[in-house]
Image (cartoon, rainbow, N blue to C red):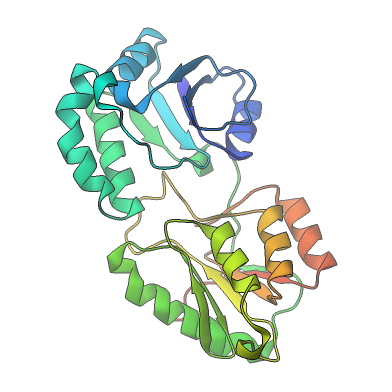
Length: 266
């Protein structure tokens, strides 16, 4: 197997490269990456050139890792392959992230590569159980409410997370991502908050392809939850990446924030 990392921002691509030092790293112009040894930078307008280079490097398997923003395509830079693929790609972009990522997987696999998930390369998910803190009994209603919201929104391909406090929805993750959601909750007026810190529930969407865009949390997530005054987070067992798990747990314990991996209540 010859692995290529299509790298976005964050520590996940770094962790994969550390564990698979011979992996071929590809970055994208205009997209940040923490990896210092990027072999090639490509443009989204030139997917044909990207696939040709990957074949020239004998790549057989591809992992998409790290945060990437949706690209703006410059029409004058399109290569022949991307020009032919663009109408379907733009249609997928007009839908949710899951639709777009499924379409990208289909494009990549259509070129003869195998797409694999980061969790198949590293031990990143957690089994059912409490990772940090103690789960108060009085947050069960909020967890159930969050699961109800996520189940309802899942067919609409909106987001993977929701914050509920005292039975009320304080925020829903949308295209802007987790950090924006938690910052929004932190800015909520005190008179709209309950006496007990709310709970953040983050899970995959129903039927989501977990090879790409698996729900992810890490130390920064915990810090933002602390600023938002939340009491804890619930993730799905074996279906959520926990980046730097030891530091994540330590941050949570230091801020009296619980982390629990538990199946949805619905």
